[in-house]
Image (cartoon, rainbow, N blue to C red):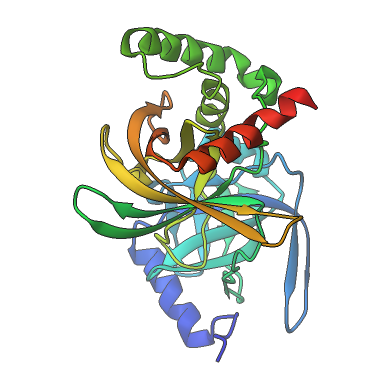
Length: 312
């Protein structure tokens, strides 16, 4: 049976006391419109460029009447004054949220916790990808893994990376990272032709968006940033990066075949961690895997897949 979306009165009281007693971080996201019914609620973001703002527990004071006073909160929160926001947080690892107005008072900005607090719905990723990967085996320990890897939404795979994929406002920072990585590659001689460094720099200069999900600490799919007949490059939050240089893994590369007698093609390879790149703030990482074993026909398939765009 599906869990009721809205908390009961008793559950709300427990959550309120939890917020009063605990050092609970929350995220605030401005919302444009909120329409609700008995079965659903639609919340629209102001723009796709609006990112949640994290508020540490020590910057909030929750009173018994349900008013949250924001104290020494990030400067960006000041832009939320007199706007409707979605407030998200975890309670016993379950994601919860409510919507309320950010008010300006003599004490500063405040938010009133409404009667209705909702559970964040669990959304299954049922998207069909033309290409995906799975890290299924750690060779050294012989440990079975099941790490799902899916394409990064902002990067087109199997095309030669171009500098223009990096937003203009991030290109200076990306160029500085690139210069560091190129110098390292010259001495380490491990980057091949280096074209994979463009999506690496794009990923490492992207803002880290901390979203509150239905369940806390759920393992997220890793982002595929680059793939060809020599390497596979993945992006992830550093806290999820459990890879170390020279470790070897078994990986399955899966392709959807739109024309032909079979609908999918799976390629099984082993690969070694060739290089780990990190963002300046250390929050994001990219792992460059270099293949160590691969069937000749699979290498030919990957080579043709990776280079076909150059001749179209």
